[in-house]
Image (cartoon, rainbow, N blue to C red; front, side, top):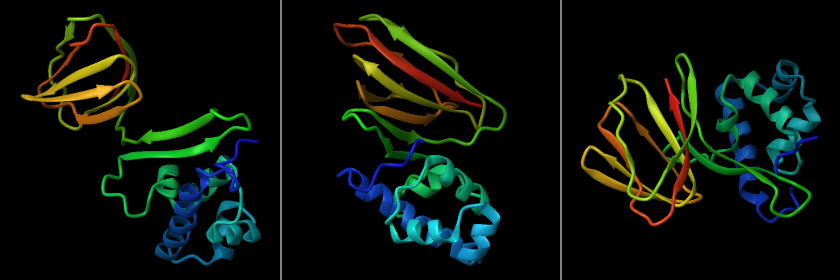
Length: 191
């Protein structure tokens, strides 16, 4: 079973606290008792009490059911409640039994029709200059090798391996490799 980060894991404290605070806050906002949320989600009241207390190692599928019952996104449950940018999550959501195994929810975006997932590689000195996209489109980038220079209008952003960045793609944007090795990244276009 895929569980959210286990409570004995030192990295779990923040995400379980976020889940605890968010479930309680969103349940109150929806004017639901724990019993009503239990009935609506199919999750036992005992489990909901433990989740809200931050004491329970909970499965990702259980959190999905709670999110659906609260009519919110999964990311609304694990993100820091005081986060300023609700599209940028960057929270450890799962850790495996073997150190180093993990799942980090980096970001979310609303899609009206579809999402395109692109694997891209730019050799040293190369560039990619697409046309601006229609209003409402956005791009999410995750660099996994090298370093990418992203030019938004006339502002340069440098994204290193292991980092991600999101932007509204209706503006002028260009991708460039200023380094001495290839840059490899995933480009997700949210339409």
